[in-house]
Length: 67
Image (cartoon, rainbow, N blue to C red; front, side):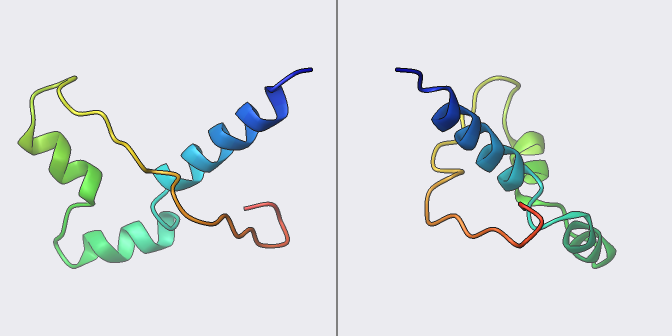
């Protein structure tokens, strides 16, 4: 038995979470002079001192194109 399909699904969800709603939403946020949450964390903490947990918590809902 292989867990690869489940692992692949988790990696896909992690990548979607890192997109933070997509480029359009991130640009809208930045156009208001704001940093994204990950950018704020990056500026506040020393490198490699933060490990995000729960990035993929919740229910996955995909659009028809698999995103």
